[in-house]
Length: 103
Image (cartoon, rainbow, N blue to C red; front, side, top):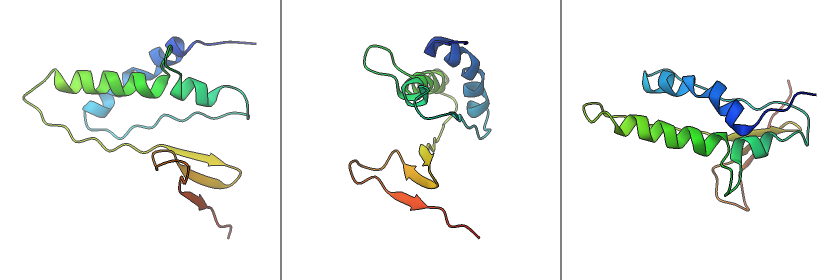
């Protein structure tokens, strides 16, 4: 079984930060079985920040280093679980839930 640290995963994700600053839409997707560590990898904790805080820190650091360019960021964080979509940036505990309808 392969195990990767959050640092390993961030090293793979880091190049998309430049793509975002170049004006491209980017997406980071954590996919896998329940209980495999996706939430921890993405969010981390106080002692070991996950991918999201690391990406945001680097994104804001890189964007502030060039004062001749103005940036506007739009960020969405969604969870899809058992056919329901949850907005992870909505205030808790009443996070908005959207149920996908089937055709």
